[in-house]
Length: 289
Image (tube, rainbow, N blue to C red):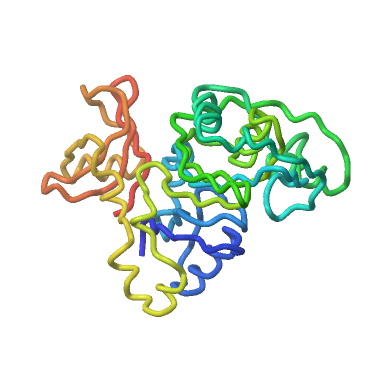
């Protein structure tokens, strides 16, 4: 069983928990391409079997989320799992439709973002949350991210919450986005809920739950994205048996094709793997057959 399986991660599960469950169910090697916080739900692509070799093609994907921001309260983790460290009255203007829409619109574009202290990013070989738990302050370098689009979904004035959807680059922390939105609304806030709806081309509509797999493991056959399907939009190079054997043995082949990543197929159009062309030389990258 080789390929990609899109899981709709449930709340309170870590990404590692999901990997461990699927690995136990199918007795295959399983990996993932990026963690989701335990409180978060949604799209978690899993790599099964030889699919674990695809991780480098998945790490740079843009992502989309639905989030709920709670105003007037700040937590140490910037989400609902943390301890409350500050409370503040929320001005009624901060919950007005036009004010919120203008504020969300102002978030669009490239920007520098400082990752939250309660994150797994490493500074000097140590994870930020380890510094945070020990009470040690450390300078966190900002990273460039981009918000492509952000739209209001709902305002709940009674609960003082704002639901919105955001489409952003990899490495974007929605907790930090929530904190910044609250700041621009002249208050404080934390991320109350988070649901990831898309990772690259993988959407929540493709995802299945752990419960569905537990009820019927056979449905994995209907949902797994095999390796040839994942690379179906890449250009092809067709090789004869002798050329394929040479490539498998590590020999570089001369070609007039442009530099890039290519599907390697037999003359009968059977998928063999992936190769990279550089300076008119084809080198094997991933062979699955």
